[in-house]
Length: 62
Image 1 (cartoon, rainbow, N blue to C red):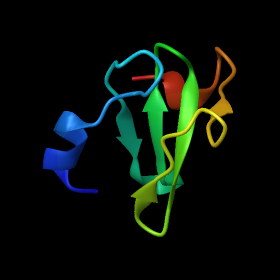
Image 2: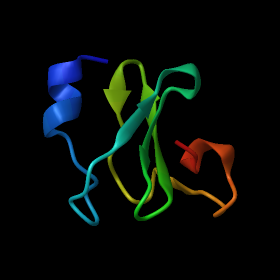
Image 3: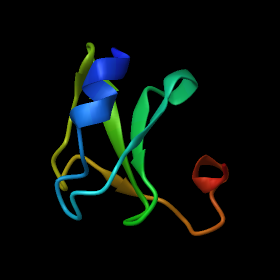
Image 4: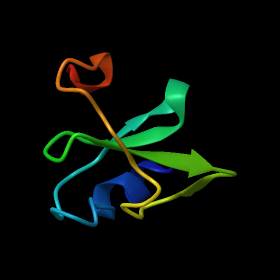
């Protein structure tokens, strides 16, 4: 994932920053506890495509 792209992309719900998790191919919004999948190199930034993360999910840790 291009770092310049990560600087401009935002969560579609809260407009907050997302964090790239390379090993899982996900973009994480910590504020909304959502994980957006990346498929074939394209982030699926739709609420219907995201999965909700449990508050204790390791993906939400620093």
